[in-house]
Amino acid sequence: MVYFEGLKGFNIQIATKDDSSKVIKMLKRIALWMKDNEINQWRFLLDGGDDEEIEQAITNRETYIVLKDNDIVATFTLLSKQSEWDRYIWGEDNTSKTLYLHRLAIIPRYIKKGIGKSILAWIQNNVSDIEYLRLDCVADNIKLNNFYKNNEFELVDLTDGHSKFQKSIRRNKKLFN
Image (tube, rainbow, N blue to C red; front, side):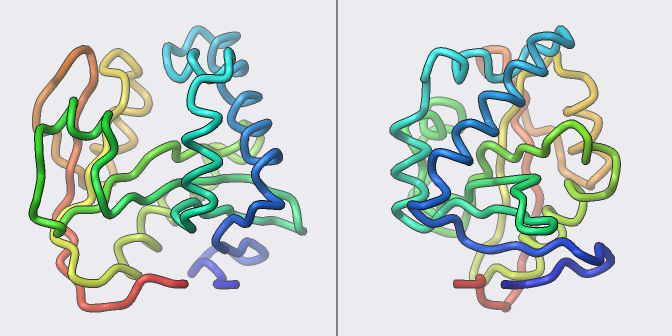
């Protein structure tokens, strides 16, 4: 377990198979909350879209959970190899110098408490031999786009209604395992 700098009482760890159903349920609850709040993001999750991909990322030790008092309050996935979606959005990247961030999610009662910013800082401070952190989000999700801009991500382009963000993160630290 690793504690976040500046966020007392929160810790981060790699998700295990035992966490799979909790992570999927949390992501679906967040997707429903977004739908109820007219935020166009992740509606496909409500119908089981990505369940297998989420479980595989957990099996591959690519998904992390953020805990507060042993409850999962956030999750994110880091891919060192492009997914099919990443290739569609970004084009082929054979450099292996890029991490792709997927499904950064925070339960609503913990939004605006600095967790998202702390997750991004943790990633940047705990990777090795990586030049870029990349992600995409729905282009008309203004708050989320502003969140990434406010965290010094560069809007690179738009593809199929998705904003493509990246940030240079040249570091020599090792990713937590």
